Image (cartoon, rainbow, N blue to C red; front, top):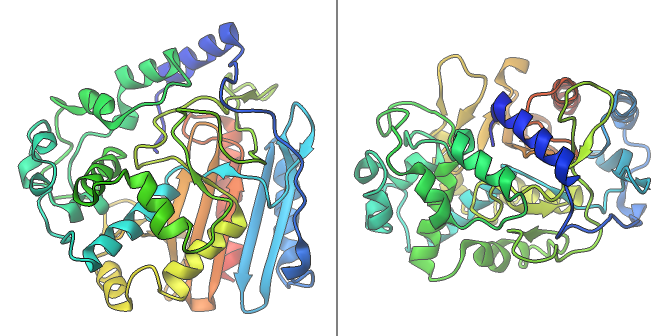
Length: 398
């Protein structure tokens, strides 16, 4: 999800002051113990990674887990706390919200349905969700491919002031896609379908509706049945705030609402729309490794031929440092690297959590990271996290 506006920041801050951001569905974090028998404690990049972790925890970031998997094996570094209030140290086994990494998982699910013959990448969305297409400007000219690579021109729900105010006025509400659609219909398109890449969280919500329409099952259920369970991603869950969080070892999420550097607030319970395709998956770095290994190393989530189509489809928005594809796989941080280095994957951000998941083909490296600090609202500490993420990318690419 992209950044919200400063008025939203002020409004959330005020509400949290009066409500103390009461956690209705999110319990305090518990200690967990990670089995390090599979970790290469002599990994050559461990010192450089741990140094960055320690530097940025000392700057005020609450906690993080950083995983590298390459030809030298797997190593995981951690720092800070999963729960500041109860001083629970962060461990690789703690679960954190992934934000938009959810979109890449949704993309993998779409291509499984394409392989089954249930979908075609150039299907107009009106073929599967005609009533929804009629409620969106240019909806009858938008294809599934345009949703996945963000060239649809669909208005972005994450930037809608009315929706964001509704979120913070009922911050643990479980939003349905039909409820969110009411904030999108009638809003102007950001461009003509297929004309230009413009990131929109609404795209993946519409993708989720299409998945449900063709399968007869909620897209969250299909994520579990077709990706999480077969890969034995036992520490991964798709969560929509309609009930208590279903797994143990959840890390709390934080943000410096006041942006004054003096305190950060626990906003684990704030739900900006989880469970609607564009965000909602909670996981840990070891499960992220399993997913990325299956997607881009072993190529078992879709066929190598389909992956070739996805990578051949990469589009760049002028002036941007990332490309998108018809598989919801991005080519990220292009300003940091020259050929042949590519960081394929997806970054994630939510109000209280952030994450990275990338594969570097040139050195066979998977980079997975989870942070319990949000970057979707502007803050100085969020800028520090952005700096850390770039430094870690550079280390991974070496």
